[in-house]
Length: 329
Length: 136
Image (cartoon, rainbow over all chains, first blue to last red; front, side, top):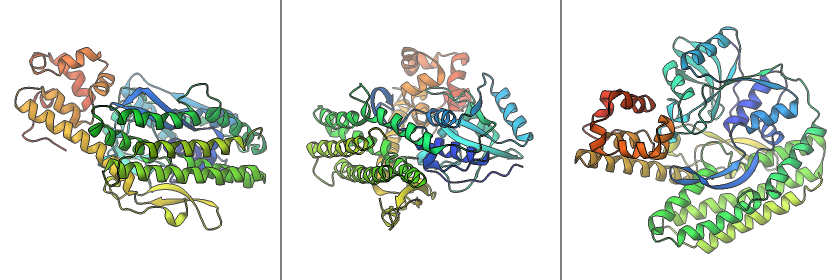
């Protein structure tokens, strides 16, 4: 069986990428994988519904980190999908028999090792399979503290669940992993790219503008005739999107701040360190927002839509100032 | 967030697992810190689970009274709603809505039912039946 060093991560995709690249010989932290792929965002997507609620994303769509890190490192992933589940499982076994490790895209709902209350139909969960023991696959799922096991039937179901973002058994491993990277080039490039996403998007629902849009939308939901039942669910939904499985706290803000700090130390640059501090403060404000919104949703404090809107505008101001400080980085 | 501010509100939704957050220590340096849960997040998650359970129990009661099909109950039991069911089976929305009505459901051939059964990991017989009580 292959040795695979399991490292717990906040987020599945950045965790899998960092762990696999490290396994290949280039040590990389999870925040570095997240930052190098310019994965931080804010997007309010009313046209994409999740159980009847709008999608609120704090990071770029699934697959962005896998692709982004490869681009920055000048490496390639061997990615395969399968129309036939049997073929997909046989291909996985063949790789494991060769002593290889592989990344898989799966659906959370069908993974039995997830706590019951975290099992939802989400098709883009990443994990690493590093071995097999009888009917069990040995899995390094980066959001868990230790490696886990999954029986073959469940893993098959999780890999071949259909629906939005269906994995189609997607399996990937790095093709000739690189051993070094020039951070002095890669980091500024990644930060510039992320700055464009956060402040330069032409749509009012993306980036800093999107955060303000969310504030206005809370007021809109509050004005609906069914607000009494709808608004608490809506506020709960926002908090879940922000803090639920794998954001590292405050909708990936702390994760990205950690990247800025690591990069600042590495390159000895004060501007990146300062930005890290500023983003940490914005993240703290996100946490306070979640706390307030939850109190209101549970009826423990008076519903004050204006206050929530003001708080989101404050967060938008803080993030805007932080990105402006990184202009021309 | 400071390292010692990382919440440790043992959340039932975590089922005993701890997840990783990023926080700063006294010198301002970032490090990964394990969290047993955060109350507001747990509330939001339980609220979502409860909502699905409520829909499931209501569908069960309506199916018991013959006003809904067992399919609707099984759909919510698998934490799906019509949009997800449509996506995982490949049926069009209007067909799914039709299949959810009891009159149409009883007449559905195995060929159609097996597509639902497969997506929900049930047998066709299980899909046709309504259990004694709503299941977790």
